[in-house]
Length: 456
Image (spheres, rainbow, N blue to C red):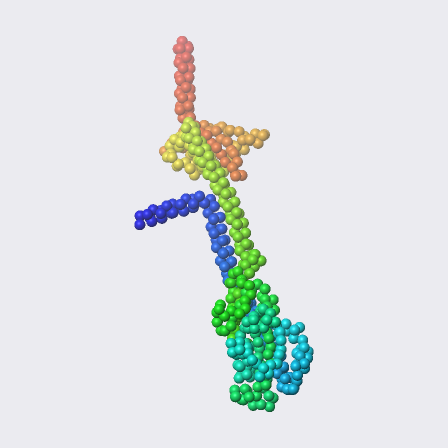
């Protein structure tokens, strides 16, 4: 349990480290994850739709193919029934007449899978009981229907060559005979029309040509038993689509199995969608990553400039607070924007109490109009504002008045006039000057006093 907790803690720590490493690009990482998720979901959905469409098309094509195969089987049955009718119409025909009849049909050109069409009398059917043709002949004789034999061995008819060879039997009865029971059919039997059919040729022409990339297997019976497989094309590499169809032909049941692959090339819409989604996700990720890098650099520059600005403001504030003279910065309306400690000490107010106070409240007469008039009268020809010096009377927080020496300069900020005012309390200088004047007056009076005494 402790080991599991340690592994969980290490994994969480690694994930946190990766997340911190991707901090400037988290938006890009989230964008590519969302893009990939949407792309994969769309791709899977399109793949499912393609598979459904391919399966529906495959089913339609296989049904059409089996219909074509059934039509060919019906054509074989019509040929045999025509031969039976011809034989019944001319019961005394000889072998040469029969050959002329079969050659006139030109079955080798229209039906290459039909190797031979023969008439065999009932007495001439001397097949071994183990021969599949014997079983088919007996079944056709007793039922009166077309019967197909089981696949014949290659040694049964060497002249027919190798391949899937079967025999079709259709009995020939006397034309006026009753055929209601098995005994009546056996008594009226004159012989059988026998057709040798190459199923492999037929299936190759119909199946392989229609489905060159599809594997087809034919089984004898109603189950796809590998031991009863009688025909099969080359095997398909990946059997994604598979269909099984039942076929009844010549009184026997056959099972046809189709196996095919779904197209998975780059030309399919699902792969095109996948490539398009990946390209869009990559482009969006690169764009967001570029923007994140630019934003990170801008934030870094902003933080650096902010630190420099704070440092400059701190240094400037330290210089202003260390100054002996008071410094006031005024806006265009004559209100105090900033003040140093010396100015607050001169007016006798607490720290920050001068901010937002109009200047004429502490220096009567120095309102907005007076400031504009003083600065307007001293604009130099070069357009630069020189320092304007003046004297005024200030009002302390206690209400007492005191003399001030002012230095005023105007400057532009955001298109508006602002003012910088330096002030100095000259109460001591005025007092010293007054005392100096009084001393000089006393000295002058003392010098004039002896001269006035003799005259008396």
